Length: 354
Image (cartoon, rainbow, N blue to C red; front, side):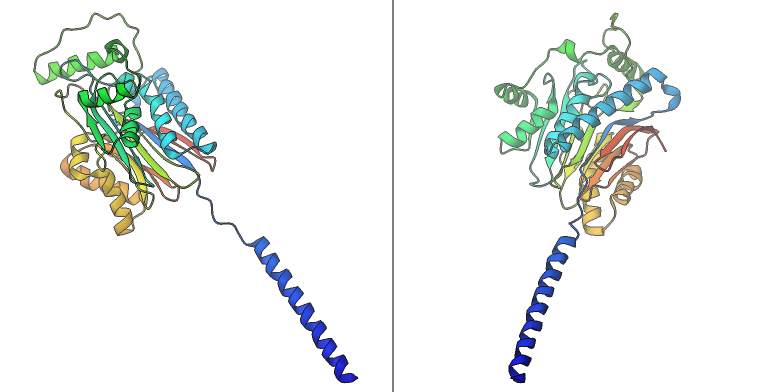
């Protein structure tokens, strides 16, 4: 009898023990911390150069700040609603391409013949697929054409008339010369030609209302974004250099020089004297320093700008965003139009050197 009772008690203890363990496991599952979420974010630039307070009026500073904020808000809304980093980069750059304040799209500078020749590129950090256009003159938004090349061809870059014909076949929007004309840009061309002692185009008698364009900066706009899926994209668009020789192509459309994105490291967009960013493969070099030397994004940007670009006599800036959503920028000029917006609540816009 006692033997049977003892067996029964053991059985009851075993059942209680099993139930307690199960409850403990269930509780552990409930309290197990969720994986750390990568904040979605984007960072932009609108050109670097001799951007100093003395060259700025309050009205000009306000105009640039408002447009940079509009660009950030546009891309952020896309990311917030679950859109891709590619789409966010495209629409953010569109805002700056459509403004005469920046040397891209509508505000593109004039080449030595008094024409616009624009470049743009975009790269997907998840697939490493990329697209670019170079030397296009009438496409309203060159970044759209770059995306078209990425998505609709087996190529990476199309140039000149071929790129424009391809864009027409896909119904991208074109504009005539008057759309891209800005009086300040044209006067900048004439001053550059006079300074260089070459042939000067006819002086304009335009009575257009003066704008707020800052001619002390080097052109280019760019954006890097990371979406809710952790995918990075980078894009760059530019009108190049004032009075450049027709046919000149800078770093903006060259993957690895002016634009680069890779989910395992970072995304980067450059602005400045493109020849130096081409010779150093600046954007890709930032990624390499992170991947192979274990540098932080901030350290990598500093190395490229203040050592590699500086050593060649070049100037400009870089913006970057790494796989963890960290944002950084660096430049060796007096200023750079720049800003970022993150899902953590941070929203920053800056113009001058710190």
